[in-house]
Amino acid sequence: MKVRCLNCGEEIERIPSRAKRGCYCNNGCQMQFRYKTNKINKFEITKKAREARTKKAIQRFKTNPKIHISKRGYKMIYIPTKGTKKYHHFIWEKTHPPVQKGFVLHHINFNKLDNKMENLKLMNGREHNSLHTTISNEQNKEKFRQYALTRQRDKFGRFLSL
Image (cartoon, rainbow, N blue to C red; front, side, top):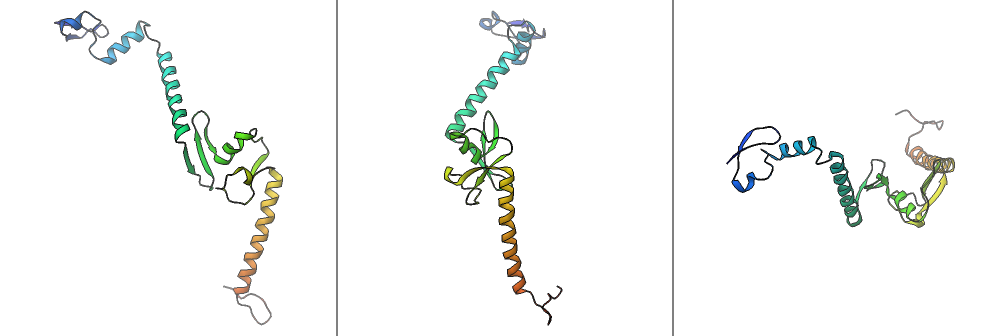
């Protein structure tokens, strides 16, 4: 039986039992017709799809969260509703309020991948920078001592040029 598509008017072949309902040449034409006649609201569909996708992502996060190591050596975690976050901040915020601006979480043993609560300490940004600066200076002094011991000197004790 020949019928016309309700959206584009193209003539199509249908079996009699299907010709009684609204006929469309394909799903695209059917959706266009529904949008035109306001039988379907495009925004409600996208909202429902987004909610379903978020719900599925949260479920996946609970069973198998996405974790990776950043370029700077920190463990990162993807949280569906918030995006990517440092893992030690995620751990900290389970029992404490979020870290405020001007403060940082310090790894006490200096291991960025050791994110146990006992190893995390909330510090002022300035204190944290001065701590790392003094430690860095001490380490650099020690490295220089080791380097100086291996370099050759002239008879007056000055380093020979390389």
